[in-house]
Length: 120
View (spheres, rainbow, N blue to C red):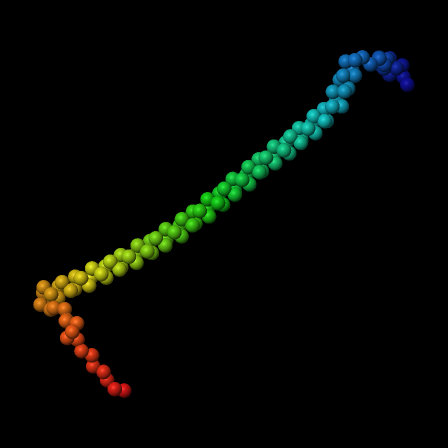
């Protein structure tokens, strides 16, 4: 070695308690980082479980919405059927009233009805 390099070299000093603590802190930091990594994994796991729970809730609401839509369609069909039935019933009464008043027709007496039987 050259004399310049020898002069630049510092003599080793004895380790003090502060040096030992600093070295211990440096060794324990990876554990903290590892603990922080586990903390992140747990945090992401909880968030993922929350997302899954929200998706399940949305699916349940969609099923209920679909069921309500089917029930609504059924009720609309029932209403249309009842309106048609009501219209038919009122049409018969209206036709009978008009036949009586305008044309002078009367209902046939059930005793005066005769059936004709034809031979084959």
